[in-house]
Image (tube, one colour):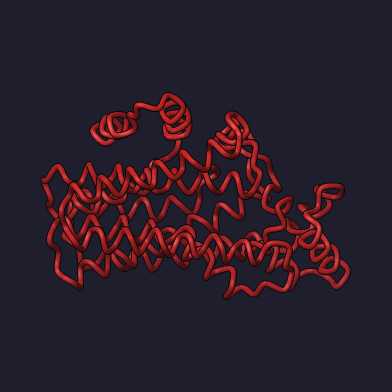
Length: 309
């Protein structure tokens, strides 16, 4: 990861000062770097020693960072990872344009790897992520969103880049098709679980640890799984209050709404859904070599469900 971070710093360089300032601000804002870590772990688990893995790890981080810049503009977010968002600091226009710069820089780097399948995987991933963003926008303030619609959004919007990262690690190692698909399935399951836990933490997390305000999804009118389940598991009166909260982006009675969700059992049910995803992810590792990297991937799956930030 130190090699990846050095590469990220080099590839961020632009002759345009504002691009350096904004891109550097968000890339170095303390993210977990989960997607590049997945790519590196799978490449190492399957025995790939090539430097290309660092280039592609940086690519997936740039793609992820571009989506964050655009997300925060769409969501009108003011806080991420405990710091002001780039759009709050520099304005929406600059954030969108620097997000575009990161996307295009990522594609420049992909081309340098000179492998058509790498381009295919990442081009598809960025397209699917964009579809997921639009699907989520269509669901905003819609309390009749189904669980299936919600899951489709997170598999597109979040899980797809996890899946692509894991697949690229296998591809760089020239793994067989069966191993590659197992790696991709692990990534897809882990990305889904990661988002499910994020949605839980929006109602029970520590704002200081999370680096964002509790209830942000509710303020934005996003019908996440805890809300959808709470509407089914609570009383008719509680369901009506939750529907109204989704419709209007509840702020006045936020604490009451959060308490309804917490008391309904929906958070435990969402954690269980995440646990099932990570269980499947762990099963996907069975066809990989038994080494320290595969063991690390197993631990990663187990720990992800219990995280608090």
